[in-house]
Image (cartoon, rainbow, N blue to C red; front, side, top):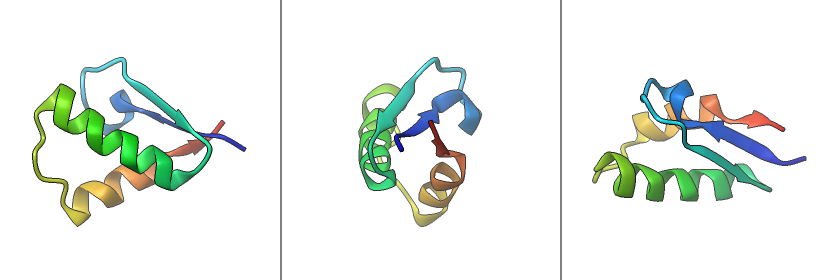
Length: 58
């Protein structure tokens, strides 16, 4: 089952949607999205936990 993350579910005004086969792949893509789109240079454990909680099965 694929995993999906909607950036807007994290409180951003963003239409970004990340889809991947695994949660780890979603986290990797989300970190890159956060750096390139939202200029978030540091991904803390707190951010990872928040992202992880927003990932859903698709």
